[in-house]
Image (cartoon, rainbow, N blue to C red; front, top):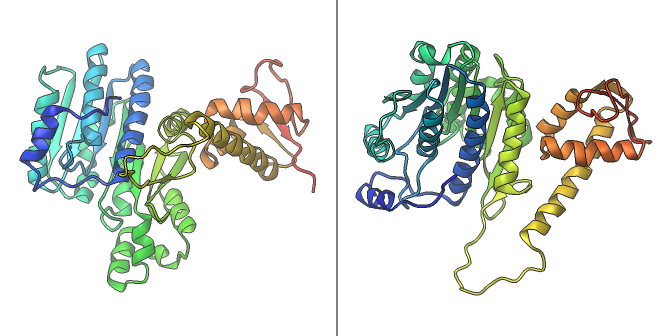
Length: 381
């Protein structure tokens, strides 16, 4: 991905500075995380040769920030142009919506910068609607998202928690086979749960059950379970925090297929290098070089060792005395740990086999690890 600033984008940001939003430190990493996944997702989907590939940003903002950095949807457009040129038989659809008309005028300027050569197999659909009306109008997407085998990714990135209504999201997920990124503002839940007016707004969006939730973990698990509808089978959550370690939001990912879960974990390691959460760091303005005895590679290696140890313990405790397919155990660990598909085999299963704590049944062959059954002996009490 090209995350470098463009000269024309800086000029455009200066021109529209009064309309554009400032970019928070965490926003940079959110953009990199989502767009890196889209790049991996596009590679897989394009090689499956579907009739259509669709990206929907239902709250797209202006596509650019005050500092001249490009937003997620416009980076996706750049990726779409590149892949569409190589796969002329696939229709690529970029759906953009925002309730602010001024932002859409700016995003059209950016589109004109990127999309100078019009491609017959790339269409950009722009709407100016309330997000809930937009998502509820399922007929609007049917022609492209309902085609058998089509690939759709919905990106929901609101300003706060009390904007997108649960029933709108659920209706969309039930209607279409798709993946979902949802920016869940946990800070709003914590801050507003005791404020009667704001709490009422949250309850209107997500139901009376929210009023009974006491902790942040319960809240996140509630949302993950509520949106596990339609074809959605797997989820993964990653938290973003400010310098004081207070959580701002979690990016929730939902997918109908284990392959999506595998690719989101690759994107997570590409961007966050195994960090348990993303935390904003204070900028070093002194000009002095901070000396560390450890390189970034050392830190990443240490995190991998820690994550792997935790995953081994989790497998042994959660599945003690249970025999099942590798895929069952692997899916659970992909959802509930920070490890990737490759990490699981190398850092979890093979070490536990060597230690005699799990037994590989060798139903197919000794060399085939992923198409086999395993018995989890567990940890002795």
